[in-house]
Image 1 (cartoon, helix red, strand yellow):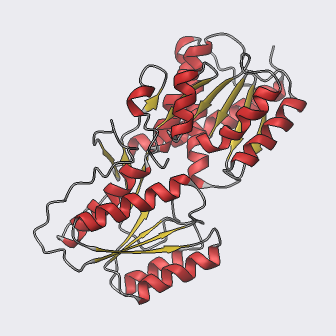
Image 2 (cartoon, helix red, strand yellow):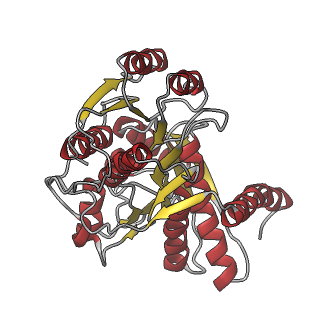
Length: 354
């Protein structure tokens, strides 16, 4: 039986997710790129030359990453570099070194060097607004990739995976798996306020609640705790250790990213609970997670957030801009994709960076 307090919390949780989904479904400024994704996290160079009416020789693509301290960022940089060079252009990169002031300075340096297009993965959605305006003033189109930026920024389009739809797919899968069985959920997040993490979380919770309403006729969303992992293995380990001490009855872990939960697996194993807990990730399709899905029963599913595909798309859109295209949607998504035991082998590549 649910208390009035629990019912109130559920209403507060679910209502914004339903509204957000409605907004997403009604908007006309979002494009989904339905490119094939059977090999999107391949370590092999699969970039193809993009058709271009203009000679791209000597054109400069500048990319600024927030950091290179994770395989995802390394794979994204490698994909952009490969696609740039494959099309005869010059690749220039800068590393924000996980410091917002250093990222701002790094972007300013790329602008000063006269790049013809700037690909920017913002560490912070607000702090990089100023440099996008600086780039626009210099006649440099800005493409936001992977993460998000405040709408007041001056940019052409955002290129990222469909975080909401991916989260929904994972949430639906979980609700179908459990049916009417009680879920005691631990939610492992990246860090507070991160826009991508928030969208993935919204997708996960929408997917669970929509599937429950569809099949059960009611919502039973029992989140025992939320913990922040700082998008790291060590953070996931510590968060899971604390969660299991405070809530030993946890039987489900949902997470905004594979990286948030890979460390948590060690804590689950040390507690002897690999047979009692099911893990579901709203992203990323990291190779270690896919391997767990293939070889175990405790990692149920993850959703594809391919740095390779995002890198290829961002360079392709820059080339389209060089050739005169201007009618870009404000957000361009890669196709949503759920990875489960049934299809994991198709997407697993041990040689991939990520």
